[in-house]
Length: 438
Ligand SMILES: NC(=O)c1ccc[n+]([C@@H]2O[C@H](COP(=O)([O-])OP(=O)(O)OC[C@H]3O[C@@H](n4cnc5c(N)ncnc54)[C@H](O)[C@@H]3O)[C@@H](O)[C@H]2O)c1
View 1 (cartoon, rainbow, N blue to C red):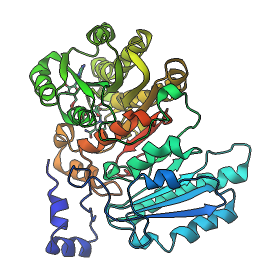
View 2: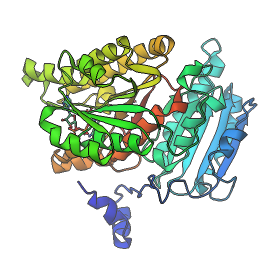
View 3: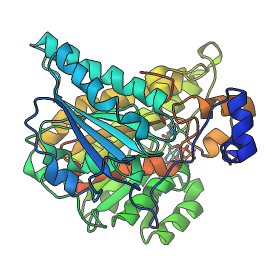
């Protein structure tokens, strides 16, 4: 599973040779750890166009000092960009500084919601997406570039803090829309401070016995949640081991069982705050060779059980107000992948579920619904891919390396955060800006 190429490029002869051969240049990413919890360097705040946003209090709470020299983070408020002329101010602001952003640094562009009635504003604001995605592909050095559309800085605080931290190391080229005027129950007004934002909350992670699910369970426990690790009876030993280590509990059942939702509700009489639908399987085969059983088993685990348990837990009132539903999509569901018509369909279905349910779940239950869409993540699932295909999968993204389960887990923890109530109906890719898909 180790990425030997990444290590080789980190040595002097490796760097020399791979540069001469024009090979990818992955940089070691600065990920969150208790020893290195923040970006190293200052924050440079720029604007383009006339803006009404007051970002100062939110940016002050990131803990990053103001600095123009080799900033670790550049934040460009482009919410006031309304036409092609003011778009030129985006170029004028970024052009002189983009070459000096520290390695593993961040560029975050802030955009306004698209105004469909004003095609000049819509064109200029949509242009920001092309700029951000293109800059993400050329900036290199483990730096990331993302766009956040917002109207209310306090509602976007948890999102900005995530993007301006090492926790978002593998999230690049994304467009995240943060709403405003959110129901107070959902917690948009909760400040993003504190080391244990999920203290007193219960989280359930399906497929939590290993891989990405285990990392999600660990990260939610780090943030203070009581975690229930759900997995199939065959994985009981692993589920118990993970739960014990995290001071949580294990629940073994097959998520495709018709009564799975009822059994989860019965096991959580005091309710649930964070539901992470992570369990997933692949049964790859080209459609021409795919028997019905391979189709139905993948659709059942990855999509139908997500629909059933979500409905059951919302109907039973198990998910408390202010709750979070996180589903797991995949870039295969966004871009498609040969040999994965079943998997791609199931993961695209997850996107449909999230987009449709999000506004209703918020209005009726005070619960947000979002998805993470992992790209190539270093797990047992991807370790089983033949060497050359695996190597291509790893490198085909702007960061030229695979992600780690922790990258998906940190993204999940941001969306699960009590202060993330204004983030709803989003599908956030954790893919190092994979070349696959939009
Ligand atoms: N690894 C990647 O690169 C990648 C990329 C995109 C999406 N994903 C998605 O992320 C999720 C986790 O992937 P992973 O790589 O950690 O997989 P994994 O195979 O390592 O772990 C999946 C876990 O889900 C459990 N599970 C499977 N069927 C279940 C069922 N019916 N009921 C309860 N538990 C069940 C398994 O026992 C296992 O513990 C999946 O939804 C997967 O599709 C992974």
